[in-house]
Image (cartoon, rainbow, N blue to C red; front, top):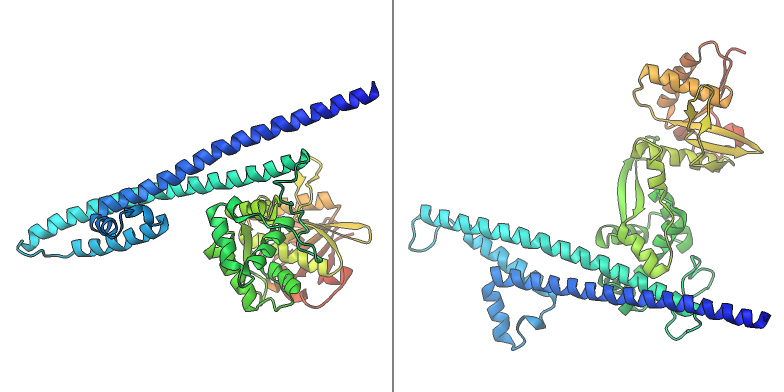
Length: 437
């Protein structure tokens, strides 16, 4: 009976897997139909624009070959329409037409030009919508095909299986099979093919994998990690080209400019995976990206500048030997209030709850109440990191005034003044002040 029960259990497991695979196959078929329909709609929209605005161009293609427009790719046809329509619009904007008065010609040509511009804008907008819908369908289809491969593997059928990446792919000498081009959407094939010959595609994948696995967001730090991986200078051309290619060229990451308030740091950027970049991680690297530090930090802080200052403060404390938590939980305070520290830093079994402050104008009443809450939550041990000496002096004065006659310990440090000095442990704190004891 035991053997029979085992066989029955295996049979039921096989049936479940078979039904799951059948469901995925049906979804795949439906999405293929949607993708094909979007492709047809896109082609029809382009041909409609060509016939409506560029009849001479269409006639030329039809005379040149019996195949007519069908022999021209969608992208080439769209480019030709833009060029021809642009030339015609310039001609239509001319003030005179032979044999007509200037005023009559101008009115007629202006009306026709306005009508053509409106139709171009409407058709162009629809074309963009169709292209976006097609890309979305292609991405979804590619993901379902990856799920199908996993289903085949679970059923023991290795004939169609493509090895999955495990997040440690291509490291320490490991190799992982590439996803075939025919299983990728058009934009992903273009991205891959454009970078195979010079190695830029592999470098792109290194960047995407780093962002997907760590959620890292600060460009200068991302550049240092990749430079060490590739044995190059963080300011080398290879690093600059990487961000340009993955940013503006292929829209895999967005780069948000942020001005650092720490002395000598200048500008930095926040690097964030776009939706297309996240799709690339899933399709090519077989990684489901973790949430970016950017999104998590923006839910806690008020601005890009405050996010960057928190990241700089965390790096400063790590360099001093602390284990830093960028997302510490809130602490309950008597009376129902809560203290949400910016950072928590641990060293030698002791945890500090730290505020990261910018040198910005404060509401005096809110400022005083804030430090009263910090005081209650930390038992009077207040730790603050600021950007520079000016901010340190302003914040110190404000906190001392808020404390009044309470007994407290106040420790402050400035990223600008301490960074690079290799101070360890408590030495990283520039100012220590004790109130009435």
